[in-house]
Image (cartoon, rainbow, N blue to C red; front, top):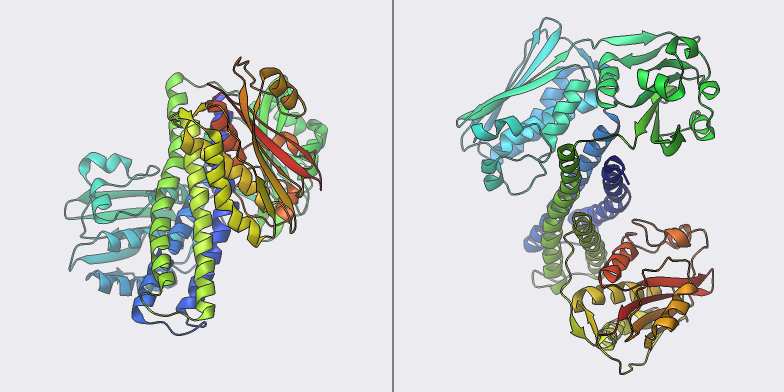
Length: 612
């Protein structure tokens, strides 16, 4: 695997998690907290409200973390897509100032606005501009000193508007000022004052302003900071003619694509005709731009995936293509004018692009940091929320009615799911960095299995599932009891999840010789790591008569984030990381893990450990 594809994979992993598995439970938690705070389920006393507000604050923070990380990931993948429209700056500024006045009062600071009477409207993306000002005002208030003053100024400078947000707060240490607009940066004094934060907002603001054709900078000292940014009143646009209407691309967007995407780029109009290609595409397909301009892209690039992606209802597409023995990741996204597609951008990303050793190390470090910092930032608020909810459930702050108890239980379960997800992400991060450690000792596997089965008896009983286990006497294995316990827990948990009412789960641990183990593994589709051990092996198995695994899905089962369609239809919760981490743990113990399964007839999962 090339370094580029490895780092792309790490990024893609995170985006999958953030978009599909974090946002939904966080939204559900916030909805339930809203219900409680609105007292639609009953009155609350002040202490109860305090705990619920604390949980709500943390849920809101989690939501902002996910939103920021998704934005950064999209910027890195495809730049910034803008929706230009005539924008009333005065209206935006006064709306935000009104929003921040209560926070200013709480921080004992004031906010003043300086705007000329004849301030012109600006043609820009109003939503993104509001986000930029929101970030600057939030920082100004958050890092202000007592009785300090924040001044927001907007004025015209020739063909631009100059925005200025000035505070008399803590300032940015001089030694760290060159890092202000980098990802994940937070100044030391800011961390001491406010422990939370991702250090992404100014990075996003800078990228957005530059995509709008503007520039951002700042001045800072121990007596405060002033952020400036300039935006053109009318961004320069390139008009590209086509038969029915004009397809407009911003110069800045094209510059961004050509500057940052050093691989192939094709611009296509709504009729799938080529508007422009770059030199990389000319080289890949041995064509000249002058010869192919105006031709249908399908005539130049004979590929069904590309042709199928250029449809009126098509969204962003991402797939691989091989050409001249080189592997490319093809990314296609539509250029829209309101709801209508005006054309497409097609990018050919070279997955075998060479990097220097230092570039390689820096890139991998950044992408791993992306995951590691996410995990750290998510873990803390989840822990605080769990504590708040446990206090409410104890009813020490006050009695709860039946509906309130149910809502708090729903929030608690959602928070626990997020904690499991964060734990899995942390394990994934450690595995990718080679820091996933095991501390093996001589243990009896059946003792650990017995304890875990006992814990699952209650859950199985609630589901009306029979959980069978007979504890044998077996020789010891050399294993980390905590990590192997994690493996056993995951496999039994999956069996309970995917076994229906009145089902049966059978758990076993047996001693097998090398030849018996080889025969057993041979019945599965998994390529074994089998190493011959003359003392034999202990084989753990858990057999269920649940939904089974579709043959099409079986080869993907131990890959990261994979969840089969059948599981998704059953609405059973999960991260799609459990089996990947489970397999990694078993392999670290020089064991094998495999399964057999028939659709609607259940599955049997096995893993082996060498006897010592």
